[in-house]
Amino acid sequence: MRILKNYSAPTTDDLTRLKDELGYTGNQMADLAGLADSRQWRKYTGGDKPRSISAPMLFLLSAQLVLDESQIDAIFAKMRDIGAELT
Image 1 (spheres, rainbow, N blue to C red):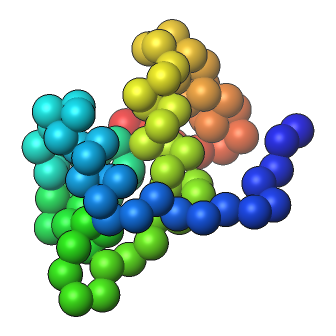
Image 2 (cartoon, rainbow, N blue to C red):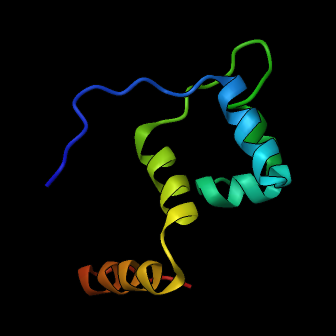
Image 3 (tube, rainbow, N blue to C red):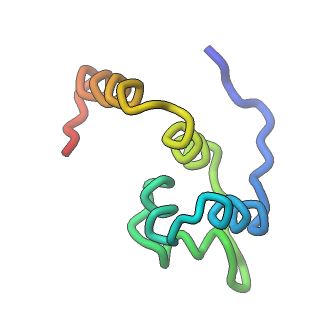
């Protein structure tokens, strides 16, 4: 099992660049990160005091960009096995 011991969050510029490279809307980025909507996403990319994206949130976002649908379905199945209810 790999555990992150040291994590430095990407900058707001890094996250904005990723959004631009993907050509995604704020709502699409929010979906990738498990956020409610684009207003929540913007809290990580701007404002007076932008939030740092957590390692688990960035992992979720990255996994959805890298893994294929069957791999994501397998993760959802494992989550259900553990006891989660997913819709």
